[in-house]
Length: 256
Ligand SMILES: NC(=O)c1ccc[n+]([C@@H]2O[C@H](COP(=O)([O-])OP(=O)(O)OC[C@H]3O[C@@H](n4cnc5c(N)ncnc54)[C@H](OP(=O)(O)O)[C@@H]3O)[C@@H](O)[C@H]2O)c1
Image (cartoon, rainbow, N blue to C red; front, side, top):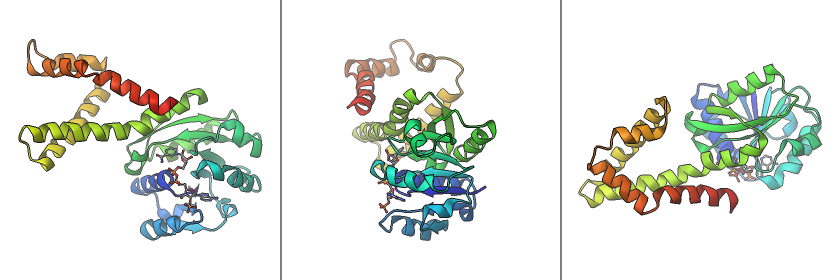
């Protein structure tokens, strides 16, 4: 299977890396870059096939559009000239199915929002498919995206908030890692060790939550003994508005 990319910026390059890290041959990835030498530099590092014109992506089964929003009209005007049987998935903000259908009427287009952990196969992407998608085309899209993590189909109206939760929260988690590590250092742990402990604790806690068959609060209940240190910490989090701070952070990111 050959995958085409238009745009190899932050998210495009993360996806290309994710595909190659999953074992896909760089020769099966064709990339059309923009005006800077970003795609050329990435090509030197990753070895995919660099093309100079969108029409050279005609041989691919799936084209992923990952350009900035201002370039969308230009890119879809090009796609209109040759896309026939191919699946087109855009991850660019503003490329609604309605927008894409203006250029590619009745074609299998999809709007997806991935996050940057796709580069290590641990991403999560929301996707909405146009009605034209056949079962086979969905399977093809899943096959490609699941090399980079999880793919979750949602109505288009939920894509934005899914993208915000999945795409902005990694930065919030980075702040959390730093703060917990600071707390470790404040109480005598060496800095590097503190980061190591916090990061592994987060991976373990996330995996436990993922495997737990029930409400996540049950896990918290299991580790809070009466009058113990953990429940005192939980009470401090409530006192300082931790839960509300996270809700407000996501809401602010999503709604401005
Ligand atoms: N970053 C994320 O985590 C993320 C996640 C999900 C969705 N998105 C969405 O994905 C889109 C891209 O975001 P980004 O963060 O990757 O932006 P970015 O780093 O600015 O990358 C956009 C890339 O598109 C290239 N480009 C522009 N016009 C092009 C054209 N006609 N043909 C080929 N390439 C072209 C640019 O190349 P040159 O610079 O070389 O001109 C640039 O490298 C945005 O709409 C964003 O909302 C981003």
